[in-house]
Image (cartoon, rainbow, N blue to C red; front, side):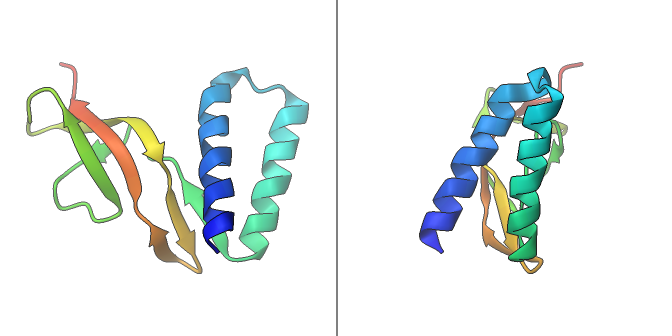
Length: 100
């Protein structure tokens, strides 16, 4: 299982780096690989841009700058990974105060 999580972590980071520059053939490859993992009950989530609160249990956060009431996930170090809807890896993220 450890090896599978390592591959999923690297794949998720690769998907993040590709961003919106993915052409259709790369997008299809990504979806096929994700479908295989889903068949094994594994999915990962990239919570980039989501709201962060200190009560959130699916991620461990490093706070950049000053703490504020409205924090946003700005970077992902590791994705959140679920197996059969149970978290098997908390995400590791960087959060910042929401820009006003």
